[in-house]
Image 1 (cartoon, rainbow, N blue to C red):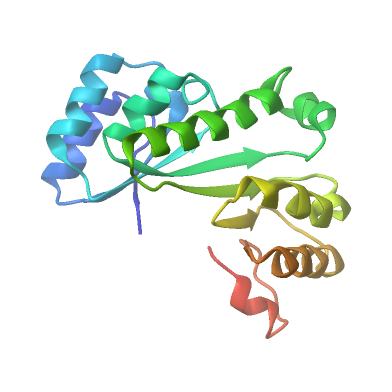
Image 2 (tube, one colour):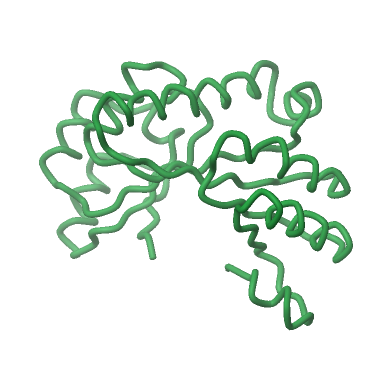
Amino acid sequence: MHYQLVCGDIVSKLVAAKEEGHNNIKIDENDVACCNLPEFYETLERLQFKRIKMKANGLLLAEQKHATELVERGVRIFEIVFHHHESKKHDSMAGPGSYRTLLESVSTAYQASVDNDVPIIFQFTLAFKDTSSLPDAVKIFSELYPSHFRIEGETPLKDLKSAIKAGNEAGIWVETEQKVEDPILAKRYAP
């Protein structure tokens, strides 16, 4: 389980988390983007957390120098949120150019991983309004090699089962934050 650092001065929150004995943390790229980056990177390096997960929107991660800094300092798990697998539909919900920025983020983070000879993991969260397109999204995004997919929000069982089937065919785990009574689907529940 990751200790979630919430908005505010991210550097002081990193120090406080370490002092409280937390070794696994989760940070948000939005918080990192608005802090003193050299101080942030130095703090990460000094504190040596065991596991760092970052929810990324591409603001920093799309730039190679920042992707390298993050990977060099221990960020190993990146959570990327997609609102649709078609760029125009994703951008209409997340802002113009955001789909391309997310894809660039995946590419630069993988390159930073290779350059630094350390493994990284991507978790793709699918926050779709049109849940009938989830199976297609799983098939398409599987080509980017995420560790797994997480389906966010209420999803009709038919669409959830179809997305899980697509994940099984691609060899990638699909989980949901939605509690369901179905005994098979209940195994996919991850709060």
